[in-house]
Amino acid sequence: MIRVQRKLAFLSALLIVLMFACRENEHQDQKSGVARSDSLDAYVGKRLDMVQTQLAARGISNDRVLSVMKKVPRHLFVPQELIPHAYEDYPLPIGENQTISQPYIVALMTELLDLGGDEKVLEIGTGSGYQAAVLSELAGEVYSIEIIHTLAEQAKSTLDSLGYENVYVITGDGYAGLPGKAPFDCIIVTAAPRDVPKPLLDQLKNGGRMVIPVGEIEQDLLLIEKSADEVITQAVIPVRFVPMTGKAMER
Image (cartoon, rainbow, N blue to C red; front, side, top):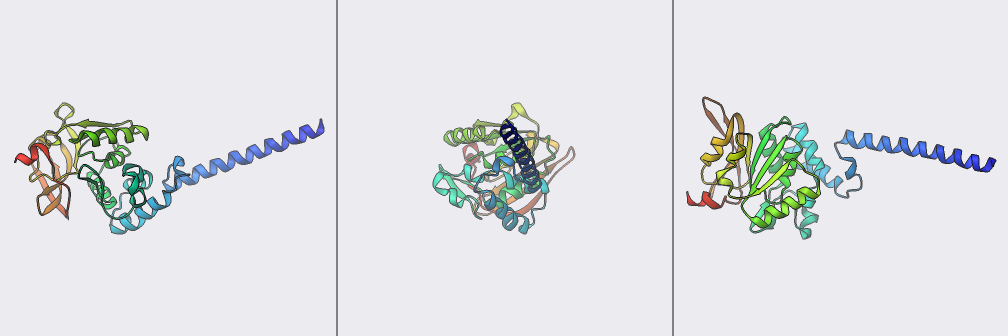
């Protein structure tokens, strides 16, 4: 009987130690900006290195953006054979002649939106869904339009499997925007039209921001800020995006 009691006491003590260890590990994960569910993710180190060497080193300074870029599993948004290259400093093909932007461009465009947490965001060009996942962590609702049906379905499947419940993927021509859900606090475009589509500008709320690459051979990433009185357009950096297709090609 005494031996049984001693074993029970030992097991109880061991359980308490394990509980405290788990709590401490969770606390450390939260402090580092890495989700607890990522603790067994072999790519955590690659994400942290990506953020330090590719983003922070180039001037990305928004703490919320940096934290999300540490968290979102970019390797799950690229084709299987390209997973080893997911966190490297360049865009990658995702099929259908489309690409996932390099991490720096994703972070820069997200930072330019200056999201506070409650915004309704429209994304044109879902691609693999990675940019939408990043936006999901920083905004209230994300509506993402993809013109290529197979990419839209794959992105929706990936986003759903990862639990991004505030992202709504729609198959359609993003040139027309999404008037049924307008106005939007922010609009982000991940394919380059020749000119800023008027429907998108019309659907941007007064006080809102749009980030969009514009041009053909030479492209600039533009930050557009809209007020009741004026629209201010600022060229940020030269970029190279895939062209916007659909109605945008007609103009």
